[in-house]
Image 1 (spheres, chains in turn green, blue):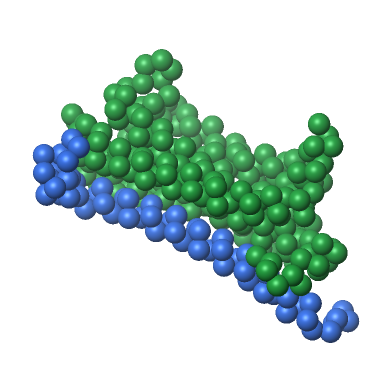
Image 2 (image 1 turned 135 degrees about the horizontal axis):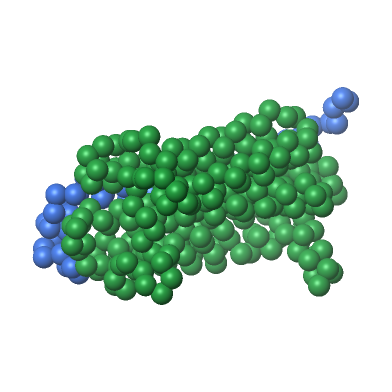
Length: 248
Length: 60
């Protein structure tokens, strides 16, 4: 098993493997997103309470879930890189930060757009909204800290520590709607066994979420290839690779 | 059209059109921007390494 892991974690192997995977994962991403958008915008029945306005759920909820999921991924890989000094793990963390930040911004923006017709306000200093905004600043902090070091090893270690400490915000965001009196509604989907929404509404949401996950995987692999090339720039395989005319 | 009575109804989202469509448009923008930025980063790293490789080694 270790031998297997070692092979996948070797930068030249990863670089080539990721290059082969990207088109396939990308195609699957497009299929899921298109089906999810079709199901959500066209097929799903109109919500009794919110009318057609509820359809924002199909982008808002996956974006919000991804903002948390990517943060946990970033912090986990930063910790793995910090503890076992695995370079590829730090590359996962570095490549995840901008993607996570953009999903967090998207969750905030679509939430704000949804809040306007439903709550009558674009923004409220509500526990859920405020803690999600803190998440955005955490992502920015991790990225800024990384950018402030010239030495990649020091950048990895410093940004890893901030990412790990910031994990405390993830359960705060998740439970904020239960712990405090929040304007934001509680979980719609995760009530085990008895989700509050109909199957015909739920299926497009789940497909859309899978699409968002695959999208993250696609862009993560693309960004990691750039990270790997840059981090390995003084190695023989990179020097040989960049001289190949068909290198991409 | 699906659960909508007409195409006009679908486009207007029974009054929520500007909210629904702007949310989806933002999503498309974020996804395209991320994809483009990832591609650019890869090709800029590659171009940078090629340039550096062609130049004689700088002593530093």
